[in-house]
Image (cartoon, rainbow, N blue to C red):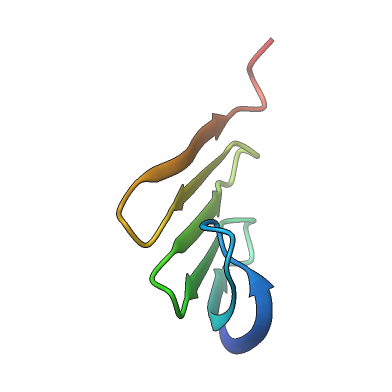
Length: 76
């Protein structure tokens, strides 16, 4: 199921407080995509996969990757 919502006054990765749009998509098996697109141009994307692993990527409005993290249920 996909949901789309508008948010206001949230701190973007660049430090500005802005509004934006959030799109969340998930299936019955546990796959989740959560995208936040800030009005300043910053982007935050979170993916959670069926096996519990995940990926989070945060990019500011200049295109600089602020964070790019992978996780796995199988990591020690």
